[in-house]
Length: 321
Ligand SMILES: NC(=O)c1ccc[n+]([C@@H]2O[C@H](COP(=O)([O-])OP(=O)(O)OC[C@H]3O[C@@H](n4cnc5c(N)ncnc54)[C@H](O)[C@@H]3O)[C@@H](O)[C@H]2O)c1
Image (cartoon, rainbow, N blue to C red; front, side):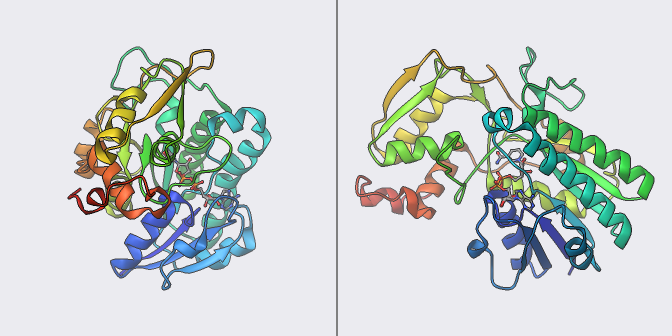
């Protein structure tokens, strides 16, 4: 049994990780300011503390005796980061520096940072591997890349083992649906399953690498346990490239519902392609994504009550994922 602290552990990825570690018998503490998260989704045996990742006194207490920190606390919207870059810098960069200082003070020796595939930007050659020079197109991307660099630099000085996982587009049950800038998968699911209109930015041919939450959690757990991965940056995705138009088709197929789609071609759909090269994840973590996009979408519909509408035929909820 090990002791973990998860920052941002009441968020989408964080709570799946926290609950899986707790179910495996580990001691899990979470710190989250609840600016986006929800503590009620955490298992009852997890020690939850409401607080900011920059709150040093709280961190000193929570870090006591911890074997490994997972650092997920962050602001996560690309478009919002353009409006409020200072906030993104304060939380995503400043929060990481505060956490590293607190780890030095308490003597915690291992940290896994959840970074993002977004930092690669628009690359001609796909899939992208970790040696590609990032193209930082948003303050969010800058903040995640800066957080990686701060973590690696400080870790070297403080004698802390570190690894950064660059997660691509994670999706799964419980992903937040904020009114402004919701992530694409739950946004499309909500529109199609409630009979609304799906608005696609651009022509819908832009591609992303959608990776199911259980695969992301597998990778995180391995990164927390493995030795000989100190100072590594590792991509975590599905290795499958999917356009927004294909995503909509997948949702129609698994839900047996038609999508009513309109295209806002004036508005950019973001970078044209993004696909993770997973060679390093396979080599260092024995990582193998197991859940396809279609199977993951079906699991969401079956698990997440927000998408179980009257429009669904009852058989869909009983299909094998
Ligand atoms: N979801 C994805 O596709 C994806 C992809 C790549 C990287 N990431 C990274 O994974 C991490 C988790 O993302 P998520 O999708 O679960 O988002 P999320 O918003 O659900 O989780 C982030 C959590 O951090 C908390 N938080 C924010 N500011 C905080 C602060 N100052 N102090 C303490 N807690 C704070 C929020 O309340 C929230 O619970 C983030 O670091 C994000 O950058 C996510």
